Image (cartoon, rainbow, N blue to C red; front, top):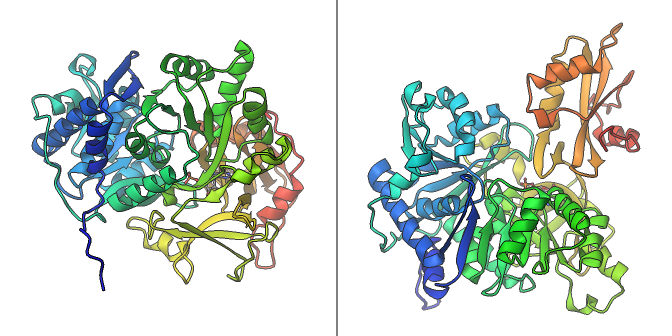
Length: 551
Ligand code: AMP
């Protein structure tokens, strides 16, 4: 027998309606690309979101299922796009501007975006690539008329529309009843380059984003609510800023967007100015902030917690926050494919009285699963491993906010899931009896530097093109600032002694600058398996004590 309850769809538009009504005095504050600080309340935000939604429909002809790309920093206009695009059943496709240009081109075309919304900062990037986007109809610059470029190749060279964001909103009605559709309708699209090969699109639904937000809020230990001010340093262009565009308005917190200024001093000043209580970001960003604490010999009084994820923080970082500055650390783990939060490292209540060192031991682990996320560990043969805190295995997950397949990518989907339909994370882990996840290694052949991915395979392929290179392998080595940096290992062709600088110069023409290896070493041969496969594990072991010049 079915329950007799209303089957109301879980739609993202309901979040902003709720926040505008329930938290009329709570605010969204943004450091703008134009240089100033912008602030408004949730009702004002909703009014502009509604205007934007009308403008998208009437002025750009946006319809259900259309993909609309964004390349933008953390700011109120970007968040307006999240809601306006999904509110009318279209798909908000956020893009990472730090990706290599070839990847940006691939992503825009694979998604078949109709329009791109970009911050002024990214005009040169889009102008340089505009001819490569045959299906794109136009570019909307996220600013007002006064800041619009007088001329641009987008319009004058490529013949595409070049539009002003504020003019899309201008004159449109500020209220509406949102359209209703199936809660499984796609709402957002984000490509991950955290696996090998081309970037892969993760297509979120209204339902998955709402359930993900509810799970995070049900966690209880996070300091999000009507008396908090949250600073998302984690970008809106990557992994939905860990769900904050949804959990923020649902909880009634103020949101403080930092714009492009992510250095320690700018973050510190903004925290003080806006009384930030909770700040979310990757370890690299917190290094800059901690250095600023040291410089000023103080932390902002208002700051109560930092949420660290995307890479594992060093123990020293957790200790600095917790012990030196008395700021609570929650360490989380997740993936683009998981919306993205999978675990959060809040301490069980019976740990409150434990000695500091034991508490830190727990805090540096990745935490316990969020409600709605199931986890299992398997060995190479697919056999489940016990959750005993010792047995290692590859971590597989499933849940209502976990991808069921990459967007239009059958080849990737063929290997992403096991026979039972669980998603392979590519992370090696242990899980303790009380559910604590500990990521111990990465099975996927990829390097994470400052929260962003470097494909070791792409770097290797690029290096192999050098005339003096016989074989090339790239491994990630720990780095105090960037978490990991690439080391390039080369077997030269017989009789050749290549100059490392010539290899760097060669690579510089092929890959993004921040992908260039921090060091190059030459070896006579590399470890291979019986089937001739390069054994990266052995190579990592061989170079585990290698010190990078920048390290
Ligand atoms: P992304 O999809 O770019 O967010 O990357 C997800 C991957 O980042 C995971 O599969 C892990 O390899 C890594 N990762 C994310 N959070 C953590 C963490 N807290 N500790 C260790 N690795 C992490």
